[in-house]
Length: 116
Length: 114
Image: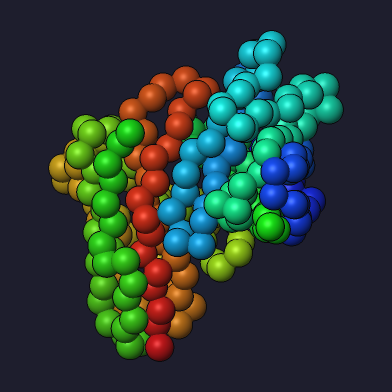
């Protein structure tokens, strides 16, 4: 079974600094995807970045990058130059397989607060 | 970006009422999902559908039911709401295959059962 672990319930960062949000995963699948979503206080889930298990290069999307270490089964999110609008919950997720279907399974999330 | 809509945004009802949470998407996605999320907690898959007339239960047991009569519409129904059903319900859709399957989420319905 797939499992996502996010060990940081809350993080603080100063505006304009970089921050790393940790994510480790446990899967028996050979092929899988790793995702990060942002959830502001308004409640919607916003897709940030995706990494495929066979991608050799770390994914980047603007200020977001995914530090993928396959041997360690970690997929940390790095946010560079933090902005006040980055304050939100951040969820790591992986593709879950089984019983003939695929869906995303999520970690418990990290609440990031960006301070001015 | 996919357009996916959920109504109502907020719902406060009394115990025993029947409710339907609406979810519609305009992108023709075959795959649709319902997730349940308690405040500050992770999302749990409760239902999914891979197309019209296809519905399956997810990982978290739920007393709710779903239907998929049209591609664009995936409503969730609670026949008799209870306080334990108080939660946020998020609908999502996707048309991608393979491991890069990105889900597009609606804004969610925050349900409070008194």
